[in-house]
Image (tube, rainbow, N blue to C red; front, side):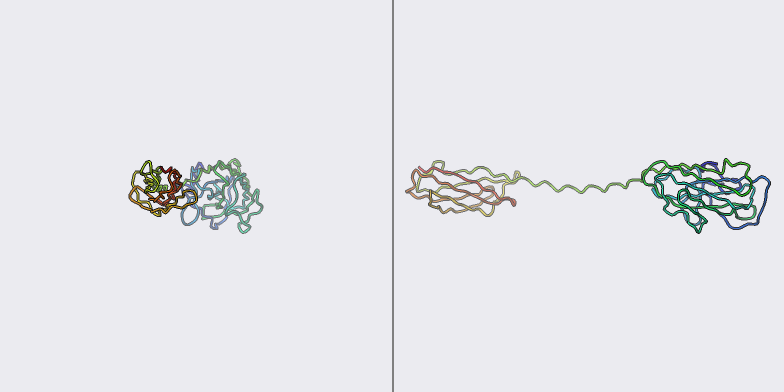
Length: 278
């Protein structure tokens, strides 16, 4: 009997999920004793493991399997189970010596069929882990002590599909911080347009953040005529940084070279200028 596509006779697997019971029972004998082997996925839940009928897919990399041997003639006898995991499957909670099991690949386990009066069953329940999603075939076979008229149902090639684990929904993306408007500063503007030596010169730089006029801070003014430094008075209004310089009357025909610097919205701005005095 291959896989877990049918139900046990006599009510052992009469529903979609059945429970194993392997308590001791009185010996019995039959001339023709047919022993069956079923391999299936274990049903979740408390108590003894159950068998999921007609279920061959799991979305967990680690999952349980159940193997059930049953004598249809209720003959109590020793049986020997051999189970082989395919490449990609490994034991998570596997066979132990306490269960009468030896070896690793394959594993051989010996147990006696037993149960309630009129029954003779044996069960094994283990957990395996898959290296990745895929299709895996677990091979198992059962050797009996008494003669078995139908050995075809003593083997099982249980094929299980391990589907990719369900992906958890991605957390919502954090909102992007609002974009900081760019600071824009224009070119220096000189007033008067044709300054004369001995007069005051005002140099202004327009400044905005985005489309908004902002008041600059930390305005600094520097200027020289040759090696002579000119004192500058800093001014700041909404949208403008300015420096006012007093030029000497003897500087006719000379060139004033200077710089105006300030901060706006945390950005340092510096503009230079050159002025020819009349």
